[in-house]
Image: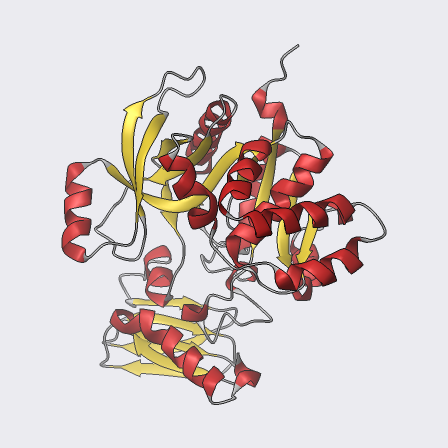
Amino acid sequence: MTIDPLQRFYGVIPAGGVGTRLWPLSRAAAPKFLHDLTGSGSTLIRATFERLTPLAGGRMLVVTGRAHRQAVLAQLPELGDDQLVLESEPKDSAAAIGLAAAILHRRDPDTIMGSFAADQVIGPVDVFQDAVREAIHTAATGKIVTIGIRPTLPSTGFGYIRQGEPLAVPGAPSATDVAEFVEKPSEEVARSYVASGDYLWNAGMFVAPVALMLEHLGRTEPQLHAGLLEIAAAWDSPDRDDVVDRIWPTLPKTAIDYAVAEPAAAAGDVAMIPGTFTWDDVGDFAAIGRLNPATESSHITVLGEGARVYADQASGVVVSDTKRVIALIGIDNVVIVDTPDALLVTTQEHAQSVKKAVESLKASGDVDVL
């Protein structure tokens, strides 16, 4: 009897990355996935979990740092210990997603996993879920499937996927081959991509049989593959912590795109489902302005419980974590982020440069505010 592919599906949520362009709101101890950045009353990780629950039921893994264990469980009290994968230190996406694949393969080699970052904003949810169902059916044919996002503007901040020929997959009418993955382009090239209609944003969403993910990881990153299999073999045993502490620090750092997706695409093993839902990776404070449009009367987007903001002939974004009154007069496209121990003042145009401030603070030893 063949098992319905949807019954083999397991949702994986990598919850890593500090989100340095969202400093000082997002920090090592409180990364962006633990914040409500949309004014919805739900943190990004909670919203991600709820999007996947109708597809996966209780079949879910969250991969995060040991330091975030309590905060993640406070957001997702449904999680059992066997659903939480804790990293002793960050090792990039290939190690995080690869370890999830290795653990799931150890428990059931027929599993199809879907990896969806904890810090993305997506809607409408039902359109996203339909795309994931198509991806699961396509993965069941022996493919690593990425969900590409129809670009709304010629962004230079994302990688792109070039769409190939349609695939005849039952249950996945929009599935196509992937012709190639393309690195972040110049603005001129990005404009040509959007105009052609053949290129979609690479949002880092992958749905695949765990056996196929591990097979490609073993070909391109044999040291990482061997280490992850050894950890997975001990994962559900009393030896877990000893094995993790011995092997995890030795694993190479690399992204899942380089380790698996791009080589697999070259081998003809990658398919794509075009996603027609809206998608934002909330990469900076300008994104928060997009996701939380200001009212016509104030022209200021305000986030923060009890934020006290006065604005006169001003526009921009204010995020407040204090009770301090913030008065803006005659200033446009400003970004102000007020926390008890750090204040950021910039413009939406320069929002991407916040990362440089974090790097400088780290270099000068001011790590208490990071």
